[in-house]
Structures are given as structure tokens and as C-alpha cells.
Length: 165
Image (cartoon, rainbow, N blue to C red; front, side):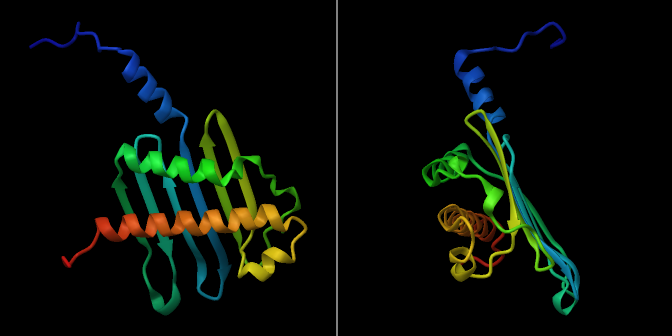
């Protein structure tokens, strides 16, 4: 079969799905440089459904953990729903604590034709949030990050479980 002259089927449904894929991306990073070197946690969801996860902790000479898994469109849809419900896209990090020696957090989101990035210091607890210049916005960020991290840890844990339950 000669496919050189074949044309790809370009249906409205396919175009809509490709447009949706192109406009959604999430990346989160939290890390610091300290006694054990550069320690960090990072994950990203790509438009094609690829979830990339990295955790580098040198505590007790642990090695870096890297995982990649493709997730279903339903997972991406749920992730979008969580982000949209949080209303994080309405926030601004201008009044949030700047990254410091304790560490930094970064959240990058591309959703609904918006590309937003947040950068702030590591947040130890809600006390740090309440003491900031923008406690409402930072609290929203804090809880969204907790939700995203739990979501990713669940996906990674379920996918790479070695022993069945």
C-alpha cells in the first residue's frame, strides 16, 4: 500500500480535539539547594497526555526518581476542571513572597488560551500564607498545589504499583 499520496482525515471533531490538546499544559516545581545538593519535585502534564514526574532527594544518598506515563483524556479533563474551579488564573503573584534560600515554587499553566506562571518561596504551612501580603491569593495557590500533588502522587502510585493489592 502506497501512503505517500494519502490525505489525513480532518474532521471537525479531530480539529477540536487537537485544539484542546494544544491549549492545555501544567508544570509544577518545588525545590531548594542545600546540604544534600539540589533537591526538588517536578511534574508536568503535556497536551498529548504525557505525565512526567521527577523527584530528586539526596537525603540518605537516595537516587533521583523519574517516571513517565500517558494518561487518558478523562484525566486531563479532570485536571482542567480542578484548575478552572480553583480560579487560580485570576490571581497575581506580585505580592507573594519571593523565592529565597529556603526554596522556590513554580506553577505554569496554559489553559483556555491563557498562559500564566507563578513563582514564590516554599510554603511551610498555612501560617506562612496568613502572614503574607496576599493571604487570599496565596491560600488559593497553596490548596491548589496540595490538590495537584495528591492527584499526581495517586496517578504515579497507581500506575507503578509493583505488588498487586
